[in-house]
Length: 93
Image (cartoon, rainbow, N blue to C red; front, side, top):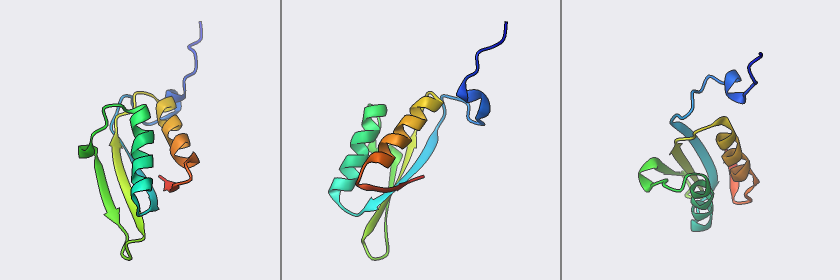
């Protein structure tokens, strides 16, 4: 009997794992609160100790570097989709 294909077979990641996502947007509370709201939908126990903030030279943009612990490729893909769909998010890497 053939094994069923799973997306993890094509990935160098072994789940669960620590994974870093960088999210960029305008430097305002609405951006950060929106991103953290999305992250906590997928990772309810996400804490402030797993986030780094970097403000642009002119104080216009904010970069959030988030260290997450996804349990599957599907969970990782879903958070990228949710972040990318949010109008406050300019870029998610």
